[in-house]
Amino acid sequence: MIQASLAPIHYPFLDALIHKSKARHSLNIGVVYPLSVDALKAAIDCHSHGLAHVVIYGPETGMHSLAQSSGLSLLGIEIQNVEGSAIEVAQKAVADCAGLHPRINALMKGSLHTDELLSACLKSSAGLRTSRRISHIFKFDVPGFEKPLFVADAVVNIDPGLNEKVDILTSAIEAMQQIGVKRPKVAIISATESVNEKIKATVDAKALCDMAAEGAFGNAVVEGPMGLDLALSRRSADIKGYESQVSGDVDLLLAPDLNAGNILFKSLVYAARAEAAGVILGAKVPIVLTSRSDSAYSRLASCAMAAALVQTAGIF
Image (cartoon, rainbow, N blue to C red; front, top):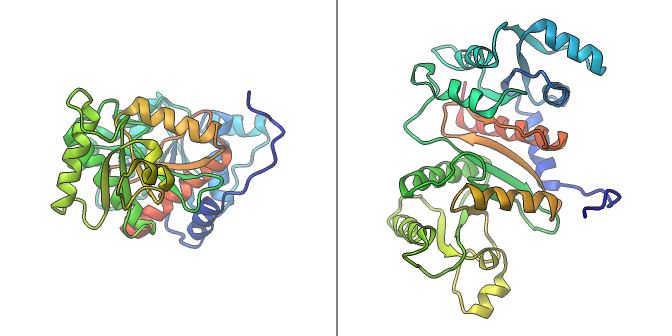
């Protein structure tokens, strides 16, 4: 279905993100349990591209053995030898992010399961939780688009209610502003632009827009419910007579639930040939939550996004 011989594509928005992050020297990232080749290579790439001081957490013998058998060099990588289960390794890395004098200001998932890392991060005693619900944001570089496209939440929250969507939207807007989108234009997407009591997403969208009108999301322009066609195409909005400041100039798509967000993510990557940087928001440090199918470039861009957030937020 997907041709392997398609011409290479350049990703100027993510390239710029990576380039700017190289100059910051602000990121001390802990890579948790990198006991797969892709996870270990992502840590090495982050170091070799000058994005961060990299600390890898896990059994030292196992990580050295993996590097040797894969032809990878750990030169310049700090190793924290932690024997035990993946959860125990995660707990050690999380502990190094907390306290009065943390040595790590971002985390990156290695080859452990997502719930193992997040359970360590979200324990009340770990010191990384905030009052806000955790969520995820992607920054997409889509071929043919004139600017980056952000999507939240396509990773963490399965079926968020209105209160959870407030947190997701607030965190996304703050993150976008931190990395240069000063007045985000937000489309709260749904199957239809009409409010229908039988479609929960449209009711929530109307409520979020009412909150935005009262200043709940700062200077962001928030509109919805809005079909994806209206969000992406000014022409579609004109044909349907839909008046909007967002249509055709959207910065953020707020997905109604995980199903919609995840399908949107995979459609952009596999059909539109986009690349994406993604981080978890809502904890005291950004968390890079990689997938086994992520490209090496996507992992690198995600580290760069974490670096940008750390630098602008002043996380030591």
